[in-house]
Image 1 (tube, helix red, strand yellow):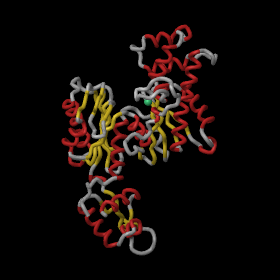
Image 2 (tube, protein in one colour; image 1 turned 180 degrees about the vertical axis):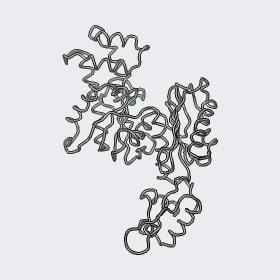
Image 3 (cartoon, rainbow, N blue to C red; image 1 turned 120 degrees about the vertical axis):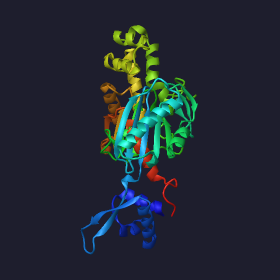
Image 4 (tube, helix red, strand yellow; image 1 turned 90 degrees about the vertical axis):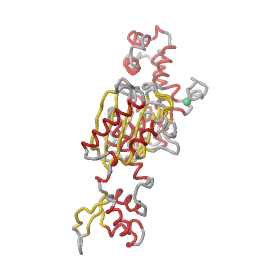
Length: 399
Ligand SMILES: [Zn+2]
């Protein structure tokens, strides 16, 4: 009971106490008891009065922002980003620092601790105020928050979630793969901050399409929502890491494009692209992809032009699937294939105009992503905040 009261107030904002009974459909005395307990335990506070209308002005109830906060931690290749958001999801503090040389689990957790405590004290909270923590890491994470493998930290089977839970005594969500957090950050503070729904379509090392509606990322029953990179679009073609052949990711991701370019006759590649490609260990893949699109031969039957055209079509098919599945207001293009690559973004949009049903009626906007890496910690903290409000987990005083 207490929980439903709190949830309704969180959802609707400040509300007079007598309106709660109508919203929840329970006896007023039951509601009053719950409100009293929530005020005593610090979850609710009475704020001002609603002055309009006849009769006595009613006192409004609101969620007490000071009751606690949520933390976000993002471990990138060489950097650590931390953020703290208030109980209502508003940003309080964030910071970024370089990861130390010692990348062992205890050393990284110590560095997290130092940063997080600093943020909490600046926000005037203590560690016990943490209601939930989100940690993102660029690696494979299992259902129990165990980091199975993370190449940049050299971790194998590290119980990351368990260590964080023991240290902070709160719910901890550990997620691998950066796209979930980027999508949440785009919705919260990036290009999607004024949109009701968005799909963040990521094409880089992998391909995925994350859906966020009213700030809530759709995660699915097993956290795999949006893994469209493993839908087969070219049956029987390139082998995929997942075991299938012709997955979207196996034919149109960054590594797939570079591998296909290497198979083209060398002479058919523009000189600067050829140079970059054959010394690709020295260049980030993003640079090579951008050069290929920028210096694409004009003649469509040239091998490189044909390859880029094919990749563009595959990418558009993925985007069209995501649009068909989710019907978003905004399609955000991110990942290194799209970054600094206006030619590809334009071509994908053109292809979508042909592929998507009722394109003209949808008013779908196709835009490029704008969040920076450090924003992901904030997006993660906001995500764990959203999840907290959607699911009580017994944190509120029992009714
Ligand atoms: Zn696959």
